[in-house]
Structure formats: structure tokens, C-alpha cells
Length: 135
Image (cartoon, rainbow, N blue to C red; front, side):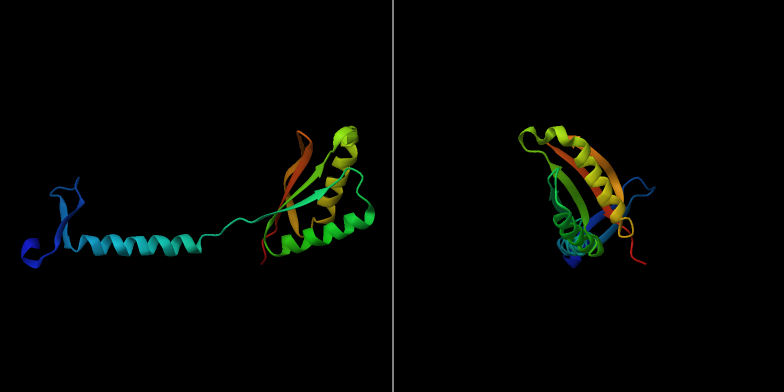
């Protein structure tokens, strides 16, 4: 029957008794499936990560300026990666870096929640903040 119609005989479920087959244009079926997959991929949410860099002895004015940027990033729905970069011998100020990041987390509490607490990785102490869901 498929040959008479110029279509393909496609086996849908081979384990059924008897096996289920369908007469269709297989190339068209593959094309439509690709189209569906493309639409689903476009609808999938993409995670955006914004970074903010501090020094261990960042001044109050610079801190406030960067905090405003962090607020805006979280309001826009992006994740925030805040880190303190220790240059040279400034690694001895680890406590100051941690205090700075915890202060940032506390100030941004209404916009996002901490995903990962400050953690030292090499010369940088990193902390992740995820935005709160907008209702």
C-alpha cells in the first residue's frame, strides 16, 4: 500500500503484538520533528551569569556603586557571581574579603538568595547569588 501511494512504511512500536506500522512521508516527519525541537529549544530559559569583582579593601563608595549594579542584574533575572580578587600579598586579608561578600549577600537579601557561600579558590573568593522569583 505504501509503494502504491509513494510513501514510506514506518514501524512505530516494534514490541507490540502485532507490530504497529504507519504509512507516512518519513522525510516530512523528520523535518517537522526538527522544527518542533527547534521551537522547544528557543523556549528553554538560558541562565545568564553576571560578574562583579571586588578587591579586599574596596572603598564604601565603590562598594555602593557595585551593589547598585548587582541589584539591577538580579532584578533582570541574571545570576550574580561576586568575587574578591587577591593580588600578590593581599591574600593575607581573606577575612576582609569574606566580610565584604557576606555584607553584599545581606544587602541583596531582598533581591536574591545566596546559592553558594564565599569560598576561596586560588586567588579569588567566590560567591553565587540567584535571583528571587518574581511573582
